[in-house]
Image 1 (spheres, rainbow, N blue to C red):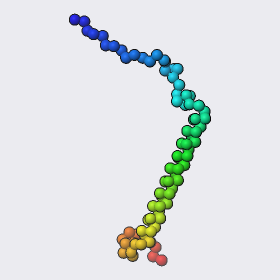
Image 2 (cartoon, one colour; image 1 turned 30 degrees about the vertical axis):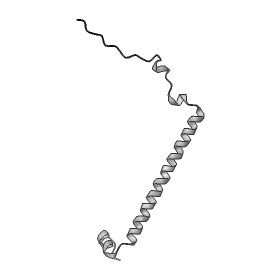
Image 3 (cartoon, rainbow, N blue to C red; image 1 turned 180 degrees about the vertical axis):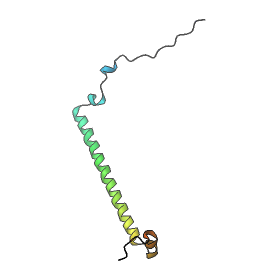
Image 4 (cartoon, one colour; image 1 turned 90 degrees about the vertical axis):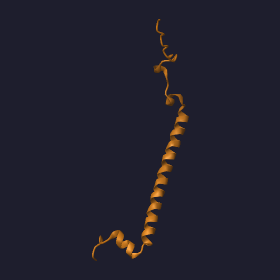
Length: 83
């Protein structure tokens, strides 16, 4: 008995050389809008990160302010100068 020949997958009718990238397919104005939106999102994320860091800093100061003398002594020990 003869073995059956496996069918090869069909290749697309166009060549890879002729494929355009997404950047090439989009118009210049659309690409500019997308880049502007990306920049806006990056700036927004940076502002949120700064706000979160500031909030944590304020919370840490508030906790330290509300610590008793014993808690401060346990936390910092004898690290300070004598005078």
